[in-house]
Length: 203
Image (cartoon, rainbow, N blue to C red; front, side, top):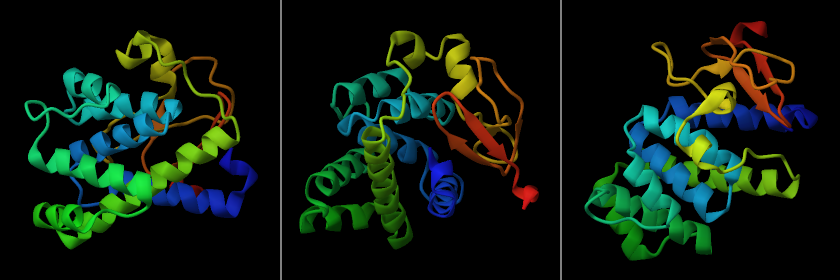
């Protein structure tokens, strides 16, 4: 998809790579907010991808199920997480947060983390709209995918590793639902069942 706009698409990929690997946000909070944005905007592809990532950083099945129901009970989520959800909801609804909400977020997060949270919400709002507008195929939202079962999710998901917080599938051909080896530090372009990988040292 983004390969059709190489300059802008490459910049967008560098931004999401930075958001996923180089921010000060707690990885669990990051993934919870991404899932909330995906659920609010019906970003099915993003939801499936980030359910897999969320589990690797400590998000529980109960938390995922609650977000899918658009619930955030205090027995499952911390005060900081619930305030981040309120912040995200208001930004998605009105493109800004209420003054009281912003002050509450600032009491819980540093200035850097507050800006990174807003960037995270904005990026996944943008990419959800782009995928919907261009009718990019998503993976079916079935129990099999949400539960992490089967080769199909393994073929698409970003894998955790010990050198970076994500690994990119290393291929430039239709996946055919087969898992692939990965390299750290690459850039990936996701399209209709095609993943294009470019390692960072490829220039």
